[in-house]
Length: 191
Image 1 (cartoon, rainbow, N blue to C red):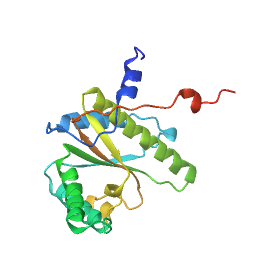
Image 2 (cartoon, rainbow, N blue to C red):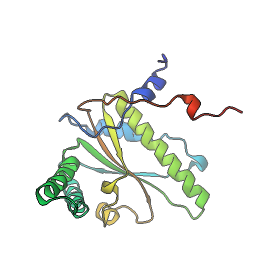
Image 3 (cartoon, rainbow, N blue to C red):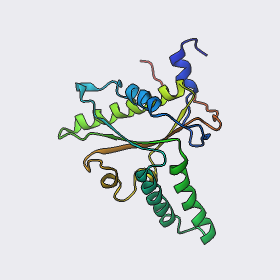
């Protein structure tokens, strides 16, 4: 393991979606969002847009209910008690996360710029994740159903043209999973 704290943070950061009850303060979350905004971005477009759904807030409850309904609808292969349990668990995950943020990227008329904006926003989310990790918190980066809710953009005031990057569940991890990566030689070619 390197003695470089950035490298150590990169190697020890994990995507987590099971949290303790410890709250995430708005000042802390603001610091992490500020770190996100320092991501590299070609052409200096600053294409990221973040929407925070406050813990206990009306919008968070509305999104949680939308997630419950979608989870119920898409679990039609399950027997009834299990289907309801899956839907209720989806709602509870959104409600109980100490912090929840949607991350979007701006679309451009130029396809190349749009692609660069998406990459820059993904870097911004990684910055946020590393900043939270440095403070003992974790981010669960979701591109699943919670990001594909019908009517999501209009419900939270996002521009319909923005590109969804992630739903971010944030909190103090209940436990930190272990992870492995394949050897570098498997993914790197030196010419």
